Image (cartoon, rainbow, N blue to C red):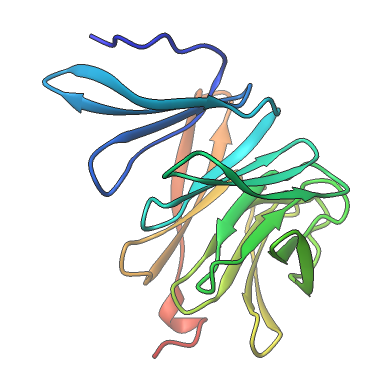
Length: 212
């Protein structure tokens, strides 16, 4: 049984690398807890007081990045302090860390692309624009940025070479995922008549990205 009260619409939860659970709801309430024999024990909680749109935790479970209706927050997992408070012209609807620890923020509204931020300031490095806005973004271990949008396009962006490979799909894309070995790229689309999300193989990334 869960001993913790959880309110609001759930936006994100994940099992961290130390087998604890991080949960955040749409109102910005964050709960970090351990699970032992079905009992949930709160380790810490905090309220960010923002309208949460997307969440990402870094691979070492040290930093929590939260996109909201007017920007993004970077929160320390160790003491829950806010390290960065980024203001943006539109809601941040997708977010990820790159290999340098910088943040990439995606927007469904103008500028309708993913933009790199270092601290509170943009680096001026950004992806191509999705006419329907960015629905999801992922950063690969070699620094490649992948964005997907309502325009049925997937952009595979090399920030070093400043080059983009474009893939065109038959339907708008709700989200994208990458296999653990970063070989295969998948897309998900919602089927309202079936009340489910379907995961479809898009491509073998070895054929479209540089690999070491």
